[in-house]
Amino acid sequence: MDATWIENMNSVMDDSKELTLAADRIKLLPTTKLILESFDLSYSSPATISRTGVLYMDNSLMGYKPYYFRWCKMYKPDGVTEDKRPEKMREILEEYSEHILEPLIK
Image 1: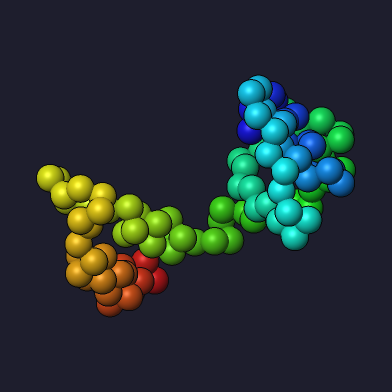
Image 2: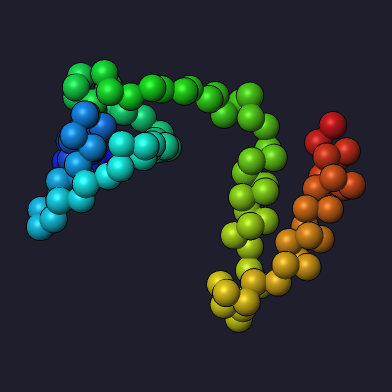
């Protein structure tokens, strides 16, 4: 996360729930919750860290499935636009995972 970006998020994470941008201010509902995914929080200030709940997930514990199924969702053959992505191809790839890829890895 970029240092400037994360500092702008501090106002969203405090009691005011207001996102302050360069040219705009966006007031969020009190029931709004944020879920952010970040590789690290090295640019975060102590104020930011104190407002977050951190869940650490080690890549070695997740295995290949999250990566593979994400790839299946993003896969599109050459010449196919995003909104015309073939659902059948996705089903076939996911089926291969269960019947071919999983036994091969084991």
